[in-house]
Image 1: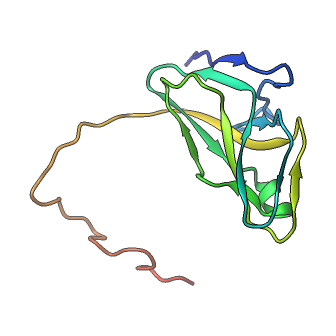
Image 2: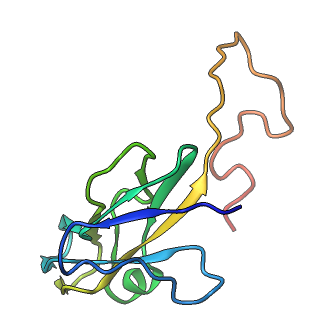
Length: 145
């Protein structure tokens, strides 16, 4: 399927998203501002980019695993959702779950953008749901080890 992702640079330091490897699902998003996060703090960091997603698509802002592993910094609302109608700047809400202060510099990779198709089903209220093999067994119902 050929789909174009239209991108506008809103800031002169903005870097177009890049994939590190040809088979990667996500594009790296980079910061256009400096931000320092102490342990347990969060902030929204600008990328200087806006996108126009085609109808029927969504952008998902995911954490970078290396940033989370090395520094405890992740995306607070992971995944962040960019709806097809949104045209503002992509801003990433970062949170420092680590034990040390972390500083984001201009140009640092702070998150990944995944773009995928979405299906929006009709909402149908019913008096009872159809049965399934799992039923209403919840979290941990198959064991935790």
